[in-house]
Amino acid sequence: MVLVSATLPPDIAAEVLSKYDLKENDFTMIRGPTDRPNLGLHMVEVQGTEPQALGQLQSLVIGLKDRLTDEERMLVLFGSHKRLKEFQDLTGHLIYSSGLTREEKNDNLGAWDAGHDQVLACTTAFAHGINQSHVRFVVIFFPPFDLMVNIQMAGRAGRDNKPSHVFFVKSREKPCNDKRVDDVVNTLGCKVEKMMLSMDGPEYAYDCLKHSEARRIRCDSCAPDQEIKNYALTCVANAIEKEKGQGFISTSAHSLVFDDEDSDAMFDKLDDDIFKELETLETNASSATVPPVSDIACCYNTTDLRNRK
Image (cartoon, rainbow, N blue to C red; front, side, top):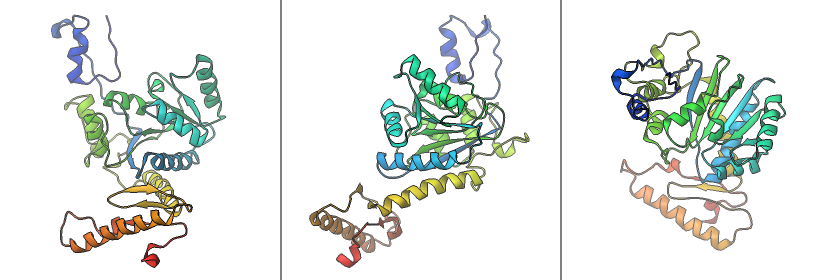
């Protein structure tokens, strides 16, 4: 009997083997590192409400798509059908999920393979066993489920062994569903090492700065100034600036959206809320726990609060 898995953390192996009534002396385990040296791992932060985060994701996808060659592809992965449908409604990209009929899945997959749309948005139904060789970018929106699922999703990238990149897109305030995923995505240390500690054990884990393979792409913790990471951050920042220009108000206390037809009463309430917060910040300026005034951004289409006050 041969049991094969691409993603089986050491602390789960015993549980899996027990289902086959196997004990430690009944088998020989052969394990290799989960790391794919040609994949760069990056965390990209989005801000605001979920619709705003989707808009920032759209900007990132548009930017990355512009970097694809004709034969290259991109995957955008979601943890729910709801978010997938919202993204499809926003962008019009092809989708793949268990909610589609077999014919719809085949049609969309065929259109993506053929390059009619270089971007395929999917749920985790696409995370396992898909072997399209030219996937250059994988974007995972609010990484769902456990670390094994996320590693499977990331593993769709760069199967031709060419340099490829995985972007974990999330807000810093909202934790992932799984602590291991959070530890990898948010670590200030090496993301590759943190991932390998969970997936492979300490005997296999290494810091990607110390890994000498020629095709090694550093994670964004170890190489924070990579051009591709800065490009991704710029795509998201552009969307945030656009939101501000359309009337997005962000303070350390609240986020909301309004348009030019909002009533004067609405503006007056916002005036009072924001200026109260400014007064609080000024009063407590010496406190290290109070955010600086620069953390408060106020942008309007037609109204300037400073003039109103």
